[in-house]
Length: 241
Image (cartoon, rainbow, N blue to C red; front, side, top):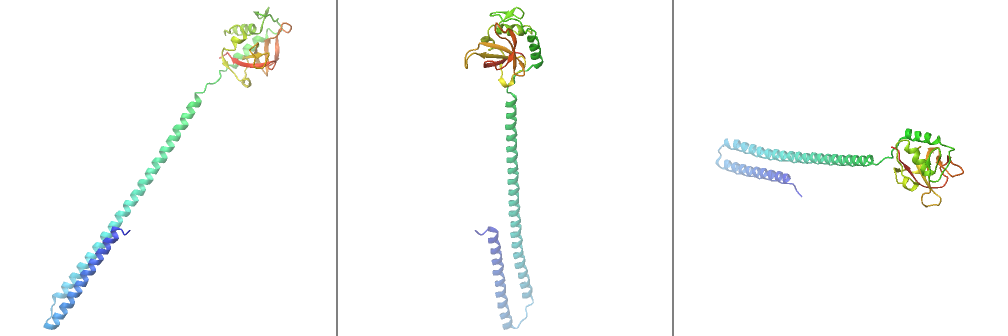
């Protein structure tokens, strides 16, 4: 497609050519007339010079207009390019802002994750107190740390000394506090066992660290320390805060 600017330029040059051809024709006619009349006409050359000057001016003005139009068109193109660049920058900034918001949301959601309560100092105090009764007798249904206690009676009485109330019976104590993974046990946590795999809770002990527990074992053994892996582990609970 031929642009409007090129068409206007061609038209200007055509008009100038037509005017010049007309002047040349008039000059030839004037020359023939002067030969016939044998008279000199001084004004004709002046008129011709003026006409040529007008033609040149018109042609140059057309060219200048064409060049000005080209400049305007180029400026518009540059402005459109700059505006496009600005829009692209705005889009990139919006994307970056959206990513930052998404990242912030993720950080917030991770910060809301509940953490296990931890009080190692209190746990160590509980363990030290429980160890004082090592060697004392086991007694079914008993809760005395000196005269005799069974497994849940032992844990209930030890924690009672620190103002922590536990229910009677291992199954009930397993519902108190927060569940703890076996690989994250801390001193003072309660560990619950079963005689059978996937069975009901039949025993409870206090974790003392280094994969060991203190508990009221059997009528023959009484209160003592053993490995944490004495039976099938059912669950572990943290009741201290």
